[in-house]
Figure 1: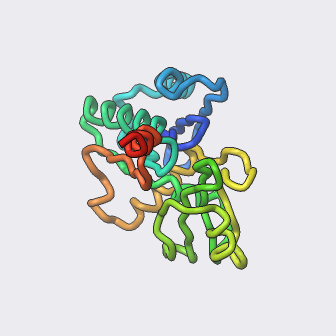
Figure 2 (figure 1 turned 90 degrees about the vertical axis):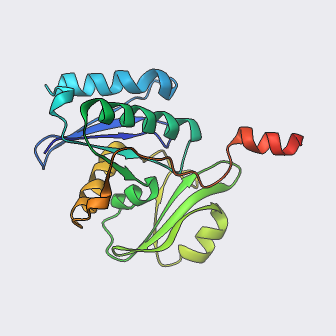
Length: 206
């Protein structure tokens, strides 16, 4: 099975290919260019560098957020378009569920992404169980209430950007192992947990 995964919920977009059910080739764009400019070049280069034709991809996986509104929208739109053109299924992966694979802990893990001004997106996991569903949050409150006995992963609290497509592949594989046909969809839908900046500004103006 060959899987192409895209992650655009954080500052740096990334793409990865699962080549033979074991090895994963990863490519990240660190140029600082907008996702709308960099993502397709990133995907094209990744495919070419690994000698993979788009038609060889069996299944797509995409990070649906929460995270950057524009980034998530671009990543989901591009993956949906490619999957539709090739008549291939899509796995929609929540960014926070993917982030938990940064930890080797079998105990409690808190995944959190920075949403600026002390805000964030967070989820907590106990082993394979989600004990706090992905939510918009105040970072300090999550740390106080959930992180005393848990490992914290993500790009919050001064940490660097750690969300990438390799983690999306790992979570997509975990979802597939559950043998749930509902995991594969025709198109992914962004996961937004708070209004966009434009929506907030419009509400303020009114």
